[in-house]
Length: 400
Image (cartoon, rainbow, N blue to C red):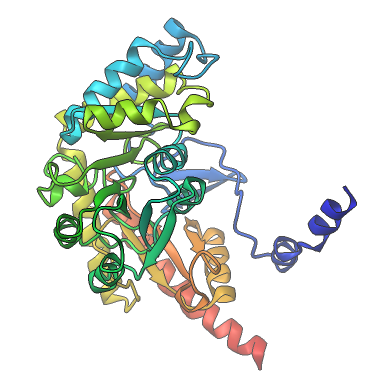
């Protein structure tokens, strides 16, 4: 027991950042998740949210959650496997399968649990999982639980992926798992090339479309639909904590694959099911996504506007192709300082530093919503440019 306390006591990274006044995590928000939030009594522009369509505060979404609690109560008190399946769980699964173009879908309580349960269920000790090196942490953890041989290939590098596939037995079970939109870099997977390789080397393809659903595709159906590859990708994963303005996740695939996952995914079988409010609010968000294209159009209008401003300001945005815009600072300490300066000046962004990314790729993650105004975006970009300039000057003076 003593070793636990020694280990905890030796961890001082967070305390050092707090002493320096640049600790950027667990900031308490005392208002709705919207384009403007309240932190410590101050109004702050929110550019750190994953609510791409801005639906978290939509009246229809909130009303659906309230009505679901009135009818079903606050929770299901059990797993989907036993007593925790409601009729609205099944309704949402059917709607999602149709939305992404697959035969069946299966709900999980969080997106993280989808990847833990699905990947560990579909790949075993004698199988192979091939991951993009920038894949989400939940994909990495799911592969660890699978006992399969896990191979990482260079980010969006099709030649490196093929070099690994060539070395594997043709008739072995191989699963390529990739993000659709990469959550920090904002670029889009080279899915057509991956599908071509999968066919050639007898591999399955799973796309984690947490950041693509509601963002890409003609009606927000996601990355796979964006490329017209719905019938070529075996599994489509998504979350509800982003464009769908709720909490939970799902996997969609052929019915036989979903039936297998239902009876083998431990994070489904041994976890409580999605709450009624979460299911109902997701259904309401899906209704809006399917019937009101203006949200998606506004999101991309905002994205183009922001990118033009950032280009004019000389900001380094890497290879982003989406409403997730990394602004590279390329220094951990400066990244923390920029985030602090911005919050003090009324702009919330998320700093991303090593080990999440290499220190030379440290960045602030700027995320757009359909509900942002051009005035809000312009104000934020202006303040970001100023914060980067001031932080660089401050560090130089400190070093001197």
